Amino acid sequence: MPRYWFRLDDVAPLATHAIGCELHTTRAGADNGPALVFSSDRDGARLRSNGNPARYDNTGREHTAEATAWRHAPTGRTSHVHLSDYVHAFLSLTGPVMHLITTARTTGDSWIGIHLDARDQHLISPYAIRTASGLADIVPATCRWRPAVVTCAETGSVDYPAQVPDSYTTTAGHALPCFDRPTIARIAADLDQLHAIDAMPGVYPILRLRGNDLIVLQEVTSDGNWIWQQVDRPRPAPGGYYALGAYRWAWETVSQPVPLLATVRHMQAVARRRLSKQVRNRPGRS
Image 1 (spheres, rainbow, N blue to C red):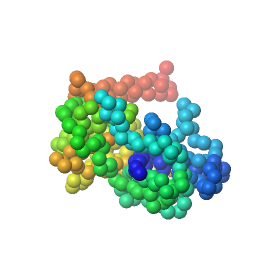
Image 2: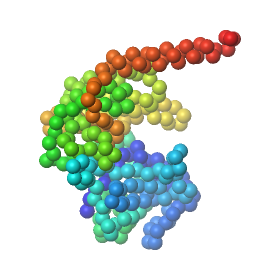
Image 3: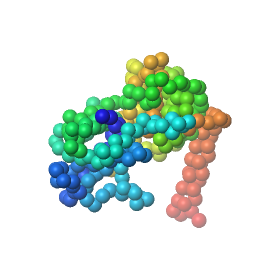
Image 4: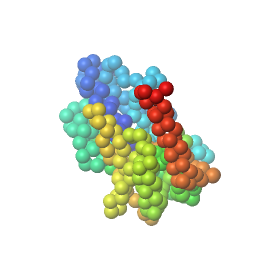
């Protein structure tokens, strides 16, 4: 039976919602308390809260955590395993499960995996849950890699050289690049520079290399304050390459690279326009 991996950032809010609700949707034979509901179809696997009322986003869609999966573009084959006789399952948010979710951050884990077992009667055991700091394999080990130039919003749309798996993307069509250590150091320095120029809270992450570990920090709100929180810790694959932002950031391959200088100049122009507008709107000015 397969193991499905989810981002802890997506799962933790669902668990908090379920715990905070007085009413919960249930199924026969399941605990009537808070739970996460696993569901699977041919398009993918996901988790949702069983809290009632449900949790929706601004578009009216119910909040869910989507399992990671790659797609092989030429064949349409994906890593998602859909079991036709195992469409739904309940994970009761018991003490051990909530302890695992709430303490994962302190242990440096950013991913949560759920292993399904046909013998569990669609009731997922706490022993089927594990957390991890990063994903071990983002694509099949037999795939070929090729050089490419990639970019994403989290890097300020600056372009970087990378190795990408030939013909493999996420199911959403995003690239899955890996970077050597010098490029990771360059991205980290560029992000520090972007923060120094004009960084709204939560816009850009920060990268820190500690030995062979790559620490990815992101600003998040906690009790009304902005704090830095570790969101990923990819370790180097054989050859020393890091899968930065894999299944997290919307990486794209590009044909015309944009250097950091162009991004910096654009940000400076935006900052000047913002400052000019603030001055014009200052009380006492006509």
